[in-house]
Amino acid sequence: MLVVMKANASEEQVRAVCQKIESFGLRAHSMPGAQRTAIGITGNRGELETGTFEALEGVQEVIKVSKPYKLVSRDVKAEDTIVRFPDSDATIGGNEVAVIAGPCGIESHDQAFAAAERVAKAGARFFRGGAYKPRTSPYAFQGLGELGLQILAEVRERFGLLIVTEAVDHESLALVDDYADVIQIGARNMQNFSLLKAAGRARKPVLLKRGMSATLEEFLMAAEYIMSEGNYNVILCERGVRTFADHTRNTLDLSVVPAVQRLSHLPIIVDPSHGTGKRNKVTPLSRAAVAVGADGLIIEVHHDPDHALSDGSQSLYPDQFDNLMVEVRQIAQVLGRTIADPVAAPAARRHAGAAAD
Image 1 (cartoon, rainbow, N blue to C red):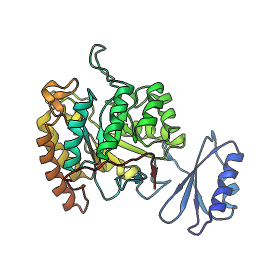
Image 2 (image 1 turned 60 degrees about the vertical axis):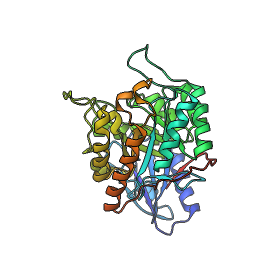
Image 3 (image 1 turned 180 degrees about the vertical axis):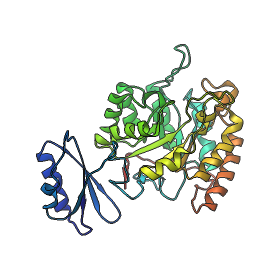
Image 4 (image 1 turned 45 degrees about the vertical axis):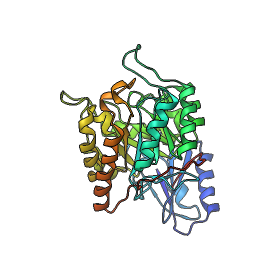
């Protein structure tokens, strides 16, 4: 159920409605919009009497939400969510197409800094790199753990890049929440419901990757788990699904971008690196992702991909990333959107926390 407040409703009236909802043992999710505030109600196991809330001051209407995903839905919030970061003008969602770039895994201080310097100069505003790596083989490189997170924090301090890195379990989630700017939940954990709930109680925005066999509804329901715990700063990511095709690692489903945007207010970005698994396909699919309306790209870049400890075959060389940025910037301009310009000398800056519109 959704309680829509009047455009001139006061903060006190919004609080009163939330308190009324909570008095029934339910959970209130206040989501301010450009014109009015909507309050989602979760936790009810049966029908609620709409008149109970329609009579409250400041309420315009009460709407029954039929979709299984409620907080994710445009029924609750018609305006697009824009995830913002204090002390930075970078956003995910909105007019600017966000670019997140860096190596698959953090291998060393020198490796991380070499990649960070190049992607920052090319115009990326976010740096990706795994401190924890869930791998198919137990013998493959698993990441540096907290040392990797410390290196990522140094990257942020030196280059002013916002940090995106994956949490693989409850223990790593607590550390990632401390060190990173965005918590990534990987494809293998998309339906790890206890981890999703924990991420929903975290302080930082969550980048949720689509599972390898997940339907659109399952993808949105996974985001609902996070939002139901009170974290409304959720970013969706299409990273390819498993099909019978063998010419790519996965099949990148770009059709999910407009499908998500029709149903949900959450931003959606695209990962053409995991989506294809082939270096020569990353730039063409990046162009296509921006053209189809994605809110951002997450791309693997390594200064020496041939010797990378993970996913070297899909990682771009820095010069290739430079060219990619030139091309996607031109496509974004055609669509009336922007991608940050290249910078001569990335400056250090401090940053922590985030909030969404």
